[in-house]
Image (cartoon, rainbow, N blue to C red; front, side, top):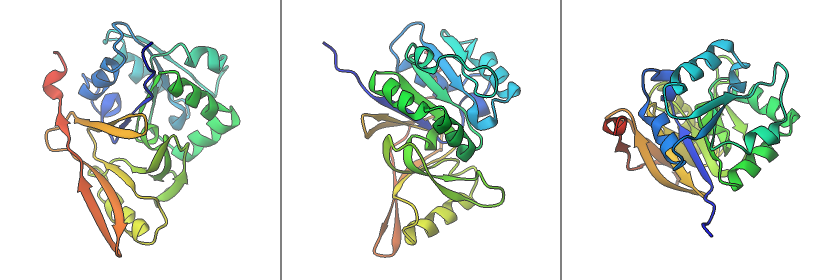
Length: 239
């Protein structure tokens, strides 16, 4: 009997939100299902279930060989467990992470997401949809500043997205690490996805030639920023 793999794919930026024509990262996520016609459910909660975001998801994923659907929490919500456990991928969009987590907790969604993950459903997402899986995330949910959020804790440590796209994140993250106000963890550029199998980062891939990802630690009152090997996969999009 084949062992079930728990997989999470965290996108620092990119995917259908930023590369709507054809995203190598989204195609990479679909390929990890090893299903010729995977079911993909979009959770746009962090955007307040914005109609425009849902429309963008369908406009992109309807061009791929998959079965797209979405779940909303601000209209009539279907039975969550029934729908989520039928998926091959649960794809979480960006937006306000703090509000998203509050809504999810009210609906007891974290327990269902963990059940889906442990049953082999791939969890993926961009920005808010990346940091939510970690113990902590560096978030801009509050206007004008970055805050440290306690997240779902499926993966150890912290996650910071948009590491090159929003340069101020780097200095804020370093200061927080030096003060030990955020856990050591990962920083991910736009266009990069880190693929976790179990609790370990197995691979990092990119749709942009020079995009990077890092592990960050505080050591002896200084910051170690250790680059992660990133594979450029844009050529694989139509392969």
